[in-house]
Amino acid sequence: MLRRSSDIAPSEITPRDLFERRREFLRDIGLAGIAAGASALVLPAFAQGPAKVFANAKKSAFSTTEPATPYKDVTTYNNFYEFGTGKEDPAERAGTLKTRPWTVMVDGECAKPKRWDIDEIVRLAAVEERIYRMRCVEGWSMVIPWNGFPLSELIRRAEPTSKAKYVEFVTLNDDRQMPGLRSGVLEWPYVEGLRIDEAMHPLAILCVGLYGELLPNQNGAPVRVVVPWKYGFKSAKSIVRIRFTEQEPRTAWNKAIPREYGFYSNVNPAVDHPRWSQARERRLGEFGKRPTLPFNGYAEQVASLYAGMDLKRYF
Amino acid sequence: MNANVLPRWRQPSATQIRVVKVVIFVLCVLPALRLGVLMWRNELGANPIEHITRATGWWALTVLALTLAVTPLRRVLSVHWLLRVRRMLGLFCFFYASLHFVTYVWLDQFFDWQGIIADVIKRPFITVGFSALLAMTPLALTSTSAMVRRLGAKRWLALHRLVYLVAILGVVHFLWLVKKDLTEPLVFFGVFALLLGVRVVYWLKDRRPGPAGPLRTSVPKMP
Ligand code: HEM
Image (cartoon, rainbow over all chains, first blue to last red; front, side, top):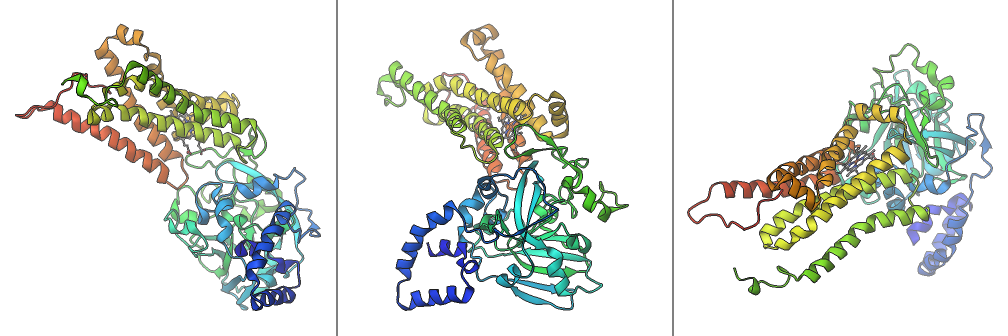
């Protein structure tokens, strides 16, 4: 129960020092058990109307006007192999993930390496609402109102050097918090990567929430990236390290099955997965299938990043 | 062997067999009923069509394994009456495979025949699943006693050996479609390897009677 209450992270609502003093106070007078009981009573209320810590997130011109996928579907149908390979596994099992305290090491080819505290990251820049399409490589899609800010905000502060050609994202690798890590289904930790110009693109965000609230654990809490023109697995979740590299990062799915999952993995209806077609997708909640758009509908913004590249070769 | 000394579970009465059949029938209907209820209550999750496709495919393969378990169980435990539920199990396998196919054609592709043909060619796992269903169809059509008589036991048995092909195609279909986690299809692979392996062992044993001779049963070998 105590663990569950920490997911809500009231530190985001209550000033942090006050919140921490409250915890100390409770511990001192030995009432922690009662507090746990009390929070169990309060929790259902939270579950009904989750704390909208980003309720005032500013709207973005990049947002789509398509109807958003219901909150319940966004938070119960997830691929997050650190918690199991079933779609319902993350929602059922991610309660063990402890998202505070949390730090993100930013290092590699940069002038200002730094270990960031999660609460510093959340306040790094104005949090926006970005309603993006999300297309999974498996052939389904959602529309998700994320909360975050351009990834470039963090990257700029690290002052990457001229050798920084790529950015690598590393997910937490702790099997006590993530039971799926005990399976050998992928090589852990989960590593993803982007070319630096992709990472600096204004569409790429560092994401800390969805639907106005803190990211639920199963969606990659406490901090993830969202790269809407690529297949979902490119958007690393529960990030603990961001590293600038000269070499192309060796990414998890690419290492696992290089023939099927390329480094770029841009959404592309013209390049089929070796075992299935990528021409169409099922938008969750819709009956029929809809055609998949090049770059997931963001071609106008991002196609220029790949000018002159053979996208069949660099899939 | 004196039939009278056999324990009841090895030689139940006609009524008891009928009860067992009803129970198995109900058990086999339950998964379909469950899907129906979940659909009615809108509780199939975020991706209902995927849920139905997976559940029906899974049950088709599971019931197929149960069907193929009849012969080995019969031989190992000498429970010959089990043969009397095998046809029903086989037909339930076909029932779930058909539901699975209908789900795909209707709910998943919505009768987009061009898309379906492209899928069958493009997605090898669909080709294999489709072949499994095709191979299953004549078995279901010739499952009646009248058809057994018309074909003659020998030809009927030969035709129904296709079920081994169906099992192999079913497992390959599953192995081929998963993204990375092979655990579940490998479990099926193990189960079917065992079920077919037992048959090979018995076949080899029966082929070369040793001095003691094989323990032949009066029942013909059945697939
Ligand atoms: C025309 C024939 C068939 C078609 C078009 C077909 C198609 C499919 C499709 C689209 C899936 C879902 C893939 C996914 O969700 O990623 C699937 C899964 C499956 N199918 Fe089939 N299939 C066919 C025949 C069969 C047959 C005959 C069997 C069994 C004997 C079978 C067993 C399975 C199993 C076990 C699964 C996986 C279920 C799971 O994920 O738990 N399929 N099939």
